[in-house]
Length: 290
Ligand code: BT5
Image 1 (cartoon, protein in one colour):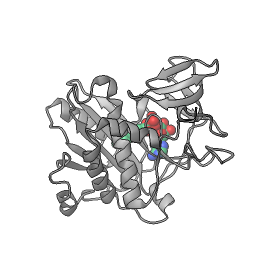
Image 2: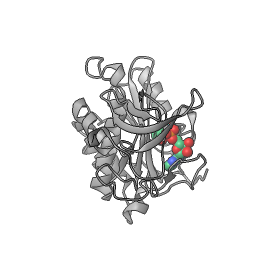
Image 3: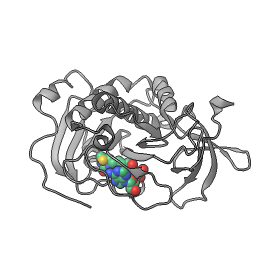
Image 4: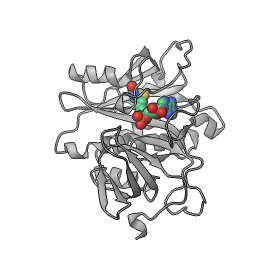
């Protein structure tokens, strides 16, 4: 993995920090280098850190994706942060906690639009991509040809019931095409926008958007579905070797965030977690189309 000098100084200046005053996310811990913002914030959460604490780093020595995969980023080129959420069971029952991932993803969609003029799409369950053909745009011959991953989101529960949600956003660097059949290629916001994209503006904008999206879970769920490019797509879901792959068509994302899939035998299966590959080719029907 490429590395470089760790930039001195924080991502957020005092002026930028002041814009978060009065929001849930006013307490921002900034580190030049850390292992993983998620790991460190889980530790702080278990030590009693308050809801809303944000940890942001210029560089991670052990950035993680799901299933202990690596999240790659050289120093100073990505937005790498985690937020600590402590929703009550009434606010967000455990079965709906995926909505925390949805809210952070949607906050990043807003920030990318506002700051970089880039429209990100959501690939279930936790990827932000560009270049996908959305429902209603089924005119393209190959709906997946240009898909590239810009960001990923990782949610983890702590032992005391809090949730740490971390996001890695490629701002001015993206990894070379990586292993894995069907895994989307990567790109970064600056490559898509064609101009510099300030990380500090992205962070402030995302945190302010998250402050608005944290709570109205019906809205979050609806917005997620609208923005989800997986719905209507022929897909393969793999389960990290725990069970055979599921091949079918993604019909919907239900209220609990599960992906509803019509399998090749015509049965309907709801999937809570897994890795989705969008098949190359035209979109199939979504529930909305039927
Ligand atoms: C994710 O996992 O996409 C969630 C990534 C979350 C990273 C953030 S950074 C701040 C916070 N602290 C952490 O330690 N983590 C979070 P997953 O769906 O498992 O995707 C991981 C896969 O994406 C890897 O196996 C690579 O194939 C690919 N990948 C790694 N780095 C990438 C990058 N910078 N851009 C695009 N793809 C990448």
